[in-house]
Image (cartoon, rainbow, N blue to C red; front, top):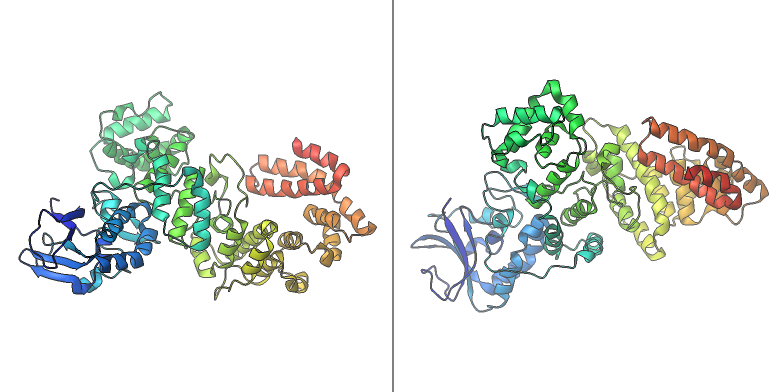
Length: 556
């Protein structure tokens, strides 16, 4: 399209022709950027000799931008970065006028009430997806062009990359989206160069270049393990090659198994569209997911790198209903609700645990409604899956609550519950106990629905082992290593209780070998293995010198 629209500072309040003194703030081609509509109200529309213009005082536009800008930044993230330049220009011209020249598109007045509505952020050619603007194939420019327009000569000072994680956590806690665009841009700058080979391969850029024969030749070479299997596509435009490979892989039913095996560990960029079609995790597909995010797509939830997890956190700042990466240490609810297996954690360099910001993990889970949680479950999952996920989340949160300071615990206990909470009944009561609500303990001990794993963890986090010593002793006698460790750590435990706790060492020693065998056979996930061994390691610590045999078996 060759239609030019402009956003200008001018000294005149009428739609007269442009003057040399007018200052260009932004321009667009073919449609009005979303941010422009938020700077005006319907009464600002004026029909001049050339068509529609929107004209308002700069102080009025600045007030609207300050009021509506946070919402737009939350939706668009780094793609709204140009708003900072427009805001600075408005601030520097308090007695002038802002004019959007739209006459190339509008020869009559459209329904400005709808177009200037700040809640309507899905103006063509964008669409809103869970709080994030997504680019579409019909829009040929960058997503920043669609959100703000092309802003000439604007630069910003970005945060130190070393501070991104801490600043993102602070923004999550406060819900502050004011610097979301800066944080996203600082993260993206670190990733753009490394993911450049995948930038042309994102699906919205694909096209049909009639390269079926070359794609099939490449798949044959890949299946046969030849070097440089994608050489047949060397002269094909990469956007056409990606389309052809994806289509050919989807039709290669007889070679599907061997292609899946060949793709494991693949790093070539053109392996990504094949892996995407066959749903095979590999480094190349991970890179494609990151490139999609850089291009305005969804955050790369399945990618294990810290940068990808941080991108998902940034998305959650702008849209609290957006899921974190399951690789994120604070994503207890996401992991439980997603049914994530080991395949999702492909390439993870460290075990996933509640390591940082446990207060935020508890806050997010306590505020989660059952309705929202149900939307995160895999297709076809029922009430039992929701209940199982809630129990798993409660256990993880009770363990992490021991790291939360007393004032924050009190604040979390005062959080109002949603009308129909995801964490309800005994699960919610266990988390509250872990946060110091000891009034919940008698009911939990008497309730058959209480998860023993969560209750032991809650008692430890609350420092209340002495209040349920008889129950803990019974658990220790049944070979519960976590309960036995808590008995050993409880100052009020008598010799009978301590003897019962020590008796859990022998079955725990046998259980180590069983756990490892089950993991080797693929019967339990890595996360389940690590959780079970962590409880035994806690018992070995509490036993002191008597735990030497357990520590030796764990080391093996």
